[in-house]
Image (cartoon, rainbow, N blue to C red; front, top):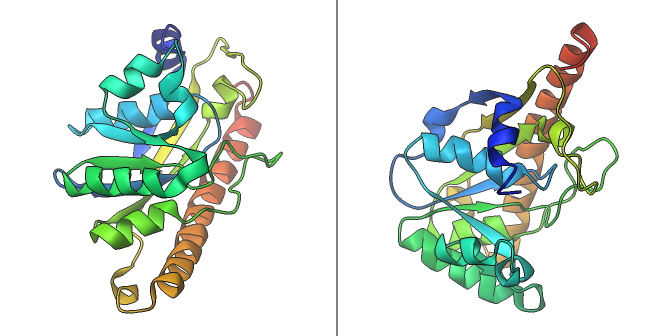
Amino acid sequence: MLVCKPLLLLGRRADWRGTERLPGSGGAVLAANHVSQADPLFLGEMILAQGRTPRFMAKASLFQSRAVGWWFRSAGHVEVDRSDGRSGIRAAVEAVERGALVVVYPEGSITKRPDGRLMSLRSGAVRIALETSAPLIPVAQWGVQAIVPAYEGRVVLGRRRRRVTLLVGDPVQLEDLRELPRATAVAVGVQRLQDTLAVMVDQLAHEHARSVRACPGQ
């Protein structure tokens, strides 16, 4: 994937929206939907262009990989051992408290839905935001899967550059939940994030579908 990076970036038209909602400094949690193995490349590009450095939460096997493990370790990304998910939450909380912009894919994996839409979310992103009082910022993305289809291990490049849209939303409201019992606060927060991100993803999916019908090949 690292070798393909220049090719992938040349093969897409970046459509970034709401980047002014990314905090210029301080810790925050970004919760993004997951449609392709290449998602971190395109989301990371957008965040870096705003002068921030993303720290991705990623499964432990990526840190142990000979191909990319060195990069995950040296870049300060957050390792998640799925046999002990709490340790990943603690590491992410510490990173946010140090002022990092931590990116979480709350679906837990690339979506398995045939239409690419949002799956049910896990609670990690909300837990981190509640524990740190950091903003929880939803990010919807669409179009990456047309270049690197999920679970297929191939890159698709056409004569036209394909549009990749990233939409940064307003922070999900959690302040009113902080006095509630933690389990209740987490459950309500996850539902709010689910509802918000689902609407954003659906919006982009509909836009791209209309664009493809109007201009086949995009």
